[in-house]
Image 1 (cartoon, helix red, strand yellow):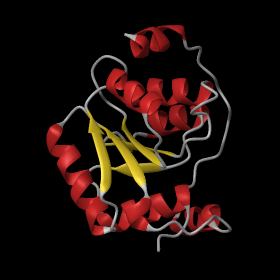
Image 2 (spheres, rainbow, N blue to C red; image 1 turned 90 degrees about the horizontal axis):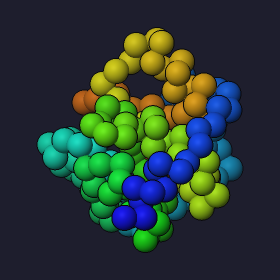
Image 3 (cartoon, rainbow, N blue to C red; image 1 turned 60 degrees about the vertical axis):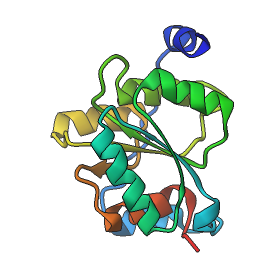
Image 4 (cartoon, rainbow, N blue to C red; image 1 turned 30 degrees about the horizontal axis):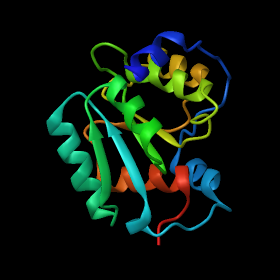
Length: 163
């Protein structure tokens, strides 16, 4: 399986991009980006829990985003990303096998996915964990349980204001 080989061959990177901490900071991060139509956005949700994937699909539908692909592992995510184009990825941090932060680092290292907008979804908001993610380059976090309001703010920060 190509994706499994790709996971093993990736090297990790560290680039200290600051994390957006407030709604105004996130809003200013998105200024000047194109205004995508919600129905044309393609999202990949990566979470090992089916119930969380259903909640994400519902929240995205509330924003008018209906093209949502769901996978339950990092290997499946890589397979999907290499086969299809996505405008946005949401990654669960805590997954068995390859976790979301490791997958994030691999995606940032690969030229095909280096600029792919990614939102890290986590129930773990401890300061040390957040610092680790920021050091790895994560800029957008979303805490579980996901609210539609918070999801909209992060999506617009990642890809621009929705129309």
